[in-house]
Length: 449
Image 1 (cartoon, rainbow, N blue to C red):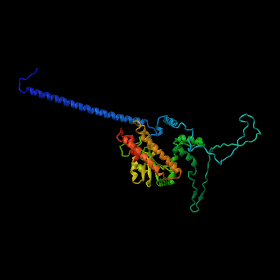
Image 2 (cartoon, rainbow, N blue to C red):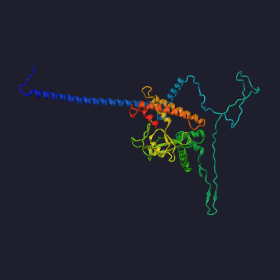
Image 3 (cartoon, rainbow, N blue to C red):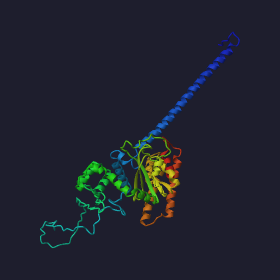
Image 4 (spheres, rainbow, N blue to C red):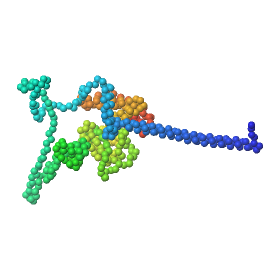
């Protein structure tokens, strides 16, 4: 059935209105669909980011002192024992024919017999046979064996110095002799050995002053106060400063061909100490996934020779590149080994080069090998193997008295390293991660710089 309007043009107006209405509905639907699509895309992006953050959290939770800069003191209870058990299980699986104890070529740590003992004693001969229990009085001698004991004797010794005086024939002034270093006129003080024991326990052993005083009283038989122990390092620092130790150490470090440097945050119990600054996005990045103090917080900078002959610790007001660079001897022009912290990079203008510490690279490689998918990150394990082979090759060369590696061996090690690094770049360049670059890509890029 068709309805026809009696008024001319009415049908055309109704159709126009209908078309306009349909268009408005379609446009509204399009806008709604676009909004829903945008919301869906945002939701998907948020979900992707959350998945990346979850992956990063799981990665961090699975890290310990063997694959990150996390100190062993912050690990969960039993972490060290669990690693030892896994390592022993792995060794049993790899080497079923492995004998117990040290392997051939391993440098043992057992005690060696002293060919010139300080004292010789004779033990009483046996009174009865160890087999039939018969008496051995008057029995014939049958050789001898030996047993040696190494021990120490702690003897308390008090030394009194006479300080003679002389009267000046000119003015009558009496001048007394100066006591030796560590002694003070008219008073009793502890000597160099006790001071050294206090420094070793508190500074090197990190023993609290109260406990250190107790240990010294038990082992050395001298009761000292915790306050005296607490100030032992200050007394040593004052004597070293008077002797010009700082200048001598800096000169010795500056003459080395290679140095290693690292910085660590410290807590300073002093109201005048610089307070940690608000964390800012600075250009100095640290490849280690470990918690670092704010850039303006107090730090200790450790500069040492690779073989540990010289170790220099100094206080820093902050970890910013200016303070860190000021801690490196100004006259040093050799190679500097660091953990990859870019705050040292501007020193390249006066240094022969900067190398990332292999121990830090290995730790980060261990962390990357745990990431997936599958065995895609096996290249990081290859880098660990290559670095260890290089270390053993260097150790063997030093044992032979050589100062360089065989050229062919060095070329092969470098070729294998570059091949593994190229694999890591290819497979991780475009792989998303919560903080930007995938840890595998960040690792290989930093290790090549």
